Length: 262
Length: 262
Image (cartoon, rainbow over all chains, first blue to last red):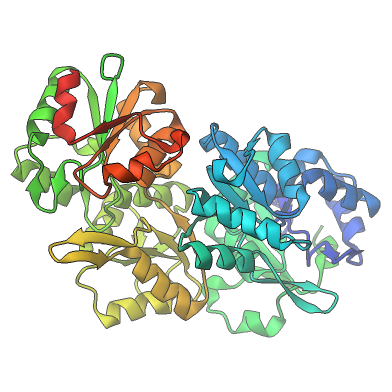
């Protein structure tokens, strides 16, 4: 599995972390991959954190990575806007990590909702009515809608919690406008950002993640090798129900199992 | 307006045509622009026709254009898939022009809905229940959804008729899945296809169309000059209600007025 692999793309939530906790063996596995000379990119659909926050979390758990190796949907959304809509003013709806990432990338933040060309929607787990309403006002006034990702729920301490899809739904229902672009995995935008960073052809990459749709789906479409870990969203039984073409190449109990292949 | 313009991007429905009828002076205006050495691209959100059908319609009205100058949302959707998802198998929902354009571009058509990686949705004004249901089955089985455009209605002989947004809504409501990408104007995908064809910087382009959102919105975001024509969807009063930054640079009664600027 790893012999002719030049680069490994690692999902974070459910693969390296469970909530704030590091998954057993994740740190040691990453160190072993680094020692074996594999290029590693960390590919996460989190759009409500900045790279700075993401790096700090990794460092708190003793994992040191190159800042450019951390590829969040907030990062890729910001790069997409900067590249394709350099004149756009953006109204962010999300935790402040999103705005930080937009500013860091050089995307202009609108002064008022009515002046925005785009609303960028991500998870906001401290959202107030005023913030939801401001995004509604921006969209009503003509701003186009982009989402960092469109996950419906994520696991919190008490079960499943409402995610980005809920905010998208709120604004779409109230304005009648549609989201025109979802940036997160399994999109080509995330895949291409990762491939550009690792500088390896897709066939020489292994993607490791807990989501059949986001992680395995991305890898399969790009011709990467795919490994599902069972430490997150997916149960083993769900894999067995899939038609062969949608199955991952490997199913691992956890990221820790990767070391056995080195 | 036209003195330092190198290229003109012309919308078709509501700008060059009203239904099957040519707008008065359109043919002569296009000829004058061609004679004046302007590069012309024809930029339409129609995703249910192929370039071949589009060229035939133009030719029937005596307008001869280079095939590559006709940039439909079906064309750009097909190119996007070919470039970013070369391994994907696609299930088209739309009039047969869509499938023709996908095949022409070399996109693989899925053999069965359940085998599709993507459903591509466009207008289908002859849709049957079986066709709608097949797209539903593809999406249910895991295919991701891309729309050529997301227009809600278009004008037919009897008023407003349901457009792509209705089909998107049907599938989203039945499957709970979201469309992840809308290709049509005002997207950067359409803009970049046009700019690549005309080989001119955006500042040297004039976009002419009847839609404030699709045509003027596209031009404004890219830094093109923008001219709204009043032969389609937009009334003059709607323009006056807009904040200055969303207004077109010029408002013309029809495409015929362009000749006065040559």
